[in-house]
Length: 209
Picture 1 (cartoon, rainbow, N blue to C red):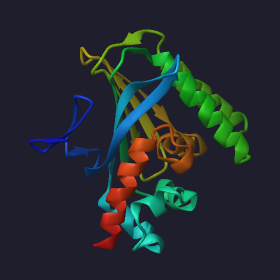
Picture 2 (picture 1 turned 60 degrees about the vertical axis):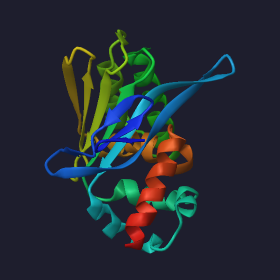
Picture 3 (picture 1 turned 120 degrees about the vertical axis):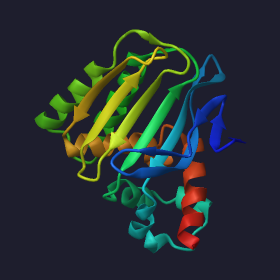
């Protein structure tokens, strides 16, 4: 839903663009959900901001529909490997412990690294540092996590509370950075299928221009 220029996802407003070192448009949005006692509970609203130049790295998929893109994991390998700036903003809908998200992230990233035969001591140390960054305290609605991915292959994670207190950590290990990005943008294995569907429809439109 659009209100002014903002996109509204479950009462959470996402600006049409953010700035890292350059202006990045909002190319996808959705939610993360968990099943608890047979109920689907929405935990975070997701906004994906990315350089439009990413389409220059995806020309192989020109003319494909959003559904065809969403079903093609090779497309997401190319998308996440493209040397462009990306920001993923995850805004809390339902109060959660930051460490809950950190534990989910750590487990998924470790599994992805092991499956790709990239889980060595350096990755283990970098991933441990990421997991320890997420505090055990509860984060209220409208707190948010910002995952900033730089074209160089490094990343930064920021937690902003509902009272606008910020903490930040850098992630230098490029293998860990790749798999954190794929946690959100990993196609069929993404933690947020609704965001993937939206992103693919928008990238399909961008590719047809």
